[in-house]
Image (cartoon, rainbow, N blue to C red; front, side, top):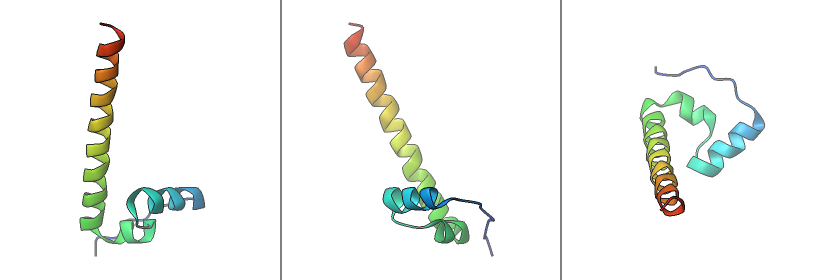
Length: 61
């Protein structure tokens, strides 16, 4: 099985549920779920970086 051992707090659990709709127990048990969550995180990060770059261009032009 692909289970990973994770230590997490109640606040982390609430944040995971709110952001991704799953808990750490499910996240730690399923490689496919982890990959989906991490892909969404990467997409969110890249989108935020594009937004920051766009705002930076507008401020400095």
